[in-house]
Image 1 (tube, rainbow, N blue to C red):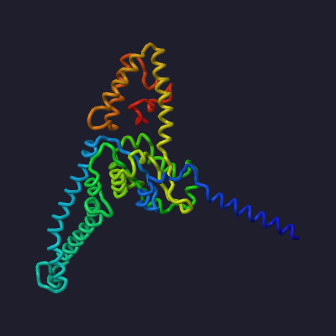
Image 2: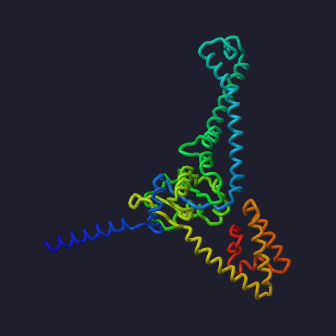
Image 3: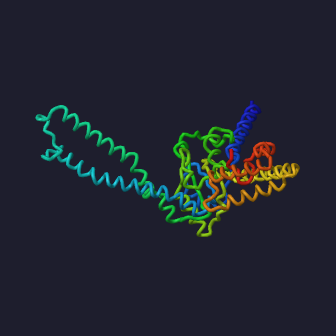
Length: 352
């Protein structure tokens, strides 16, 4: 009996130890962040998932992009102020009439026909509804843009300015609140990764957009996080290279964890380099090696034009490349497919 009890205790202890060891394992593909990131991580909200990366678009391009929301919010704010200046006196008169004051808004119900009463009721209800809609849906735009706390687009640009290299910090929106506590244990084929995280770190998508254009239904910009990141860089406490594309999550068991997804890009870039070499070899075998170098010159020229290599500009470059190849009797699409797809080639990473 004593021997049996001893075996049960040993088995229980072994199971407990195994469970504790399992809990202590950091879920793949995450790693413990380097100590240099600690000051930055202290300012993040553990309830959110974050994606950081370096935006390398030219500063002039970023300024042009940011000018659009600035002008739009200024116009909206002026329109709202005008409406407030017109509406407030009207509401004041209606309120005073309701309290018993004899003024233009007071309605003599006993001596007013039903058609007039109906018109007054409908017109006022419509005015109330329209003003409520403005307050509910339009006011938050300029309010959050100019005065949002703890930071907003204006305070971000005021403190960071426009730089050739800017740190972009994105955070998950409300969908993160519904995640099960075990989602970190999933592999990257899980729903959270396939529908939320992987689309947000797609190399072509990240390269195509400047930071301010990355806000969507799944991800928002953390303006305070971006301000803090640049402040730490200015204080030489951290470097720009420490913000290469990375997913940041918080685990109750392990604290902050990072997934350095930029390493996936590096592996993909090496694979793409091999495809480009194979592409050149195919052209050389066809006696068209000069076509390869003319294509390289075309892409280098298009990418060096001021304004950034936007998706529109890239589409134009792709069309020019096809014309160039067709003039030499070469089908660029077919040749690209033979070596793994044209998206592997320089300047064509966004062609999907």
